[in-house]
Length: 337
Ligand code: PEP
Ligand code: MN
Image (tube, rainbow, N blue to C red):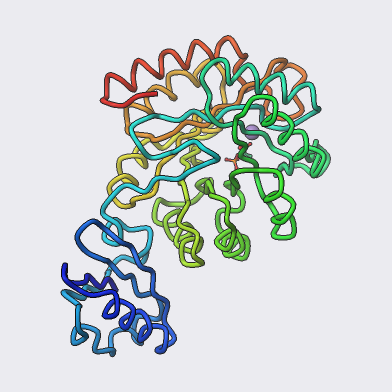
C-alpha cells in the first residue's frame, strides 16, 4: 500500500499517519520527494486493506500495490536511488566500474591489482575473502586475513572495498573492514542472511541467483529493504540455461526490465556471466549500452596461478583497454564513465 500525502500536509499529520500505522502493527517507510511525501505501508495485505487510511488528515491518495514487491518498486520511489560505496556514487550518470581479483590471495597480490585497476579507472575494489566454492576441496578464501588485506589495499589506493558475505556470523567483522557487502548468487534466497544485511549500515550488492527469475531477485531485494536498508544494488551475473558453451548466459534482458521495475541501481557482471576471458569485453560494452549503472569485472595479474576463476580474469592491460572502450560506449548512450 502506497500513501501519498497532500503537498500542504503538515509534519504532525504525516507523523500521525506513521504512528497509526505502527500502532496497527504494520511498518511505515517514508520517502520524501520535493513536493510530496510517500509512505509505504508494509505488512499483511488483508490487515492493511481494512484500515481507514484515506480518511486521515493530510492524505491525498492510498493505492494498493498489486505487485508482490513494494519498497523496491518504482511506485514507491519514482526517482533513481543512488547508492554510496565509500565516496563513490552508483546510480547517477557515471557508469561505475568495480574490479579486482575473484579471491584475495595475499597482500602483494591484492595491493598490486588494486593499484592496477585504479590506474585503469576502476572506482571500487572487489575481492573475495569468504568464497562460495562448488567443491569443499578447493580454495575457500583467506577469511578475516583476506579482509585485512583488502582494507590495506584500500589504504594504499583510496578505493572503497566490496566483498562477499556468506554467513550472518561474519557480518560484524566484514563491517569493520569493508565498504559494501556482496550477497552472492548462491545466497540470493538465503533469507536469514538477507534480513541480517538489511539491518547493516553498509550498502549491499545482491547478485541474481543462477536459477532465479527477475521477480525472485526483486523479492529478495525486498527482504533487505523491508529491514530498513535501502542502499541496495542489483547485479545480473548470468543464469543457467541449456547453453553450455559459456559458463552462464548473461541475461541482458534483465537490465531494461529492472530499470523499469525498480529504482535500485543495476550492476552487470559480465565476468561470471560469460566466464570466458576473450568474450568479456563485448558483454561489458553491451551491458553499458543496455543501461547498466555499474560493471563488476574480475582482474588478475597472474590468471594462470589464480586460486579461483583464473580462466575468466582479464589481465590489467586488457582491463585498461576495456575501460577506455566502456567510456566511449557510455558517452555514446548519454552516460559518463
Ligand atoms: C564472485 O563474485 O566471485 C562470485 C562468486 O559471484 P557469483 O555469486 O555471482 O557466482
Ligand atoms: Mn569469481
